[in-house]
Amino acid sequence: MPMKKAKMPPGRPQRGGDVLEAALVLPVLLTVLLAVYSFGRGWNAYQTMTQASREGLREAVTTFCDTCSDPTIAASHIRQQFVYPALEKAKLDTSKVRNYTQGYAWLDGPNSQEVCGVYVSFSYPYTLTIPFTPVPLTTITLTTKTRMRLANHPRDGTCP
Image 1 (cartoon, one colour):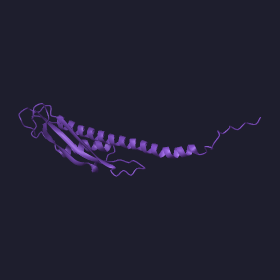
Image 2 (image 1 turned 30 degrees about the vertical axis):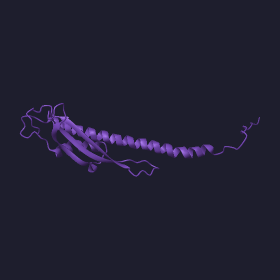
Image 3 (image 1 turned 180 degrees about the vertical axis):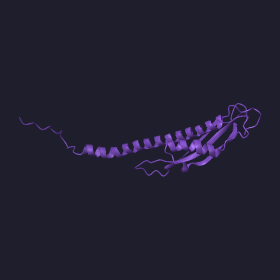
């Protein structure tokens, strides 16, 4: 028994309409998906920077002692032994790190100059890649500043 052809609705045939819709929607959808991925990767880079600076600060805080002849730790030691290896582990290029600073300072507290602590601060340029868009500002500078107090610091009014 021969099969009957489906009847077309009256009016113009709709040949190629699905292809045209896909051609219009797919670039927009792809752009949005890749933009979300790029922003997610940027957020991941920022979180990695913060975690790397915390690792360095933890070392600086835990090795501080009252009886040491020199209680301060060189910034280069913290940077090279703790911060940079954590960045490299997350596949971030350490040669792009800018404005690295580390030091001892009074941290904000209820009373001024109450708590002595350590801080690490640095910046990293991150390039957003959003295809099909002529975005002029595709590189953003991620900046982190992490602080940690010295738990066993004497309250004698000095901060190393």
